[in-house]
Image (tube, rainbow, N blue to C red):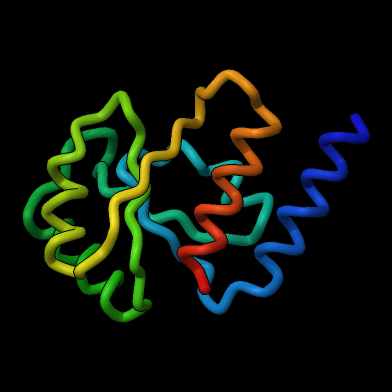
Length: 119
């Protein structure tokens, strides 16, 4: 339990210094993570489906307005939509696996990558 509390404190500190609070993901797998650290995740999938052109345009506009530089994708999903948006906004695609084996290390890694994208 102490390791979880320590990780939570570490992540809270990382996100307290973030200039932005919005991050783009392919699939909304980070909902609780975003909630717990006062972040806003913007999924590319629209109602669990690949996004249509209108929704993609809205996400691109939001990303540009908020200077988003990364899109987070999961290994089990086709990254095609993420690649299209990343190209439009000159962003990087970063793999994050919410189902990786070592929970603590995975959350630390995810937190670091998301926090770096918010600077």
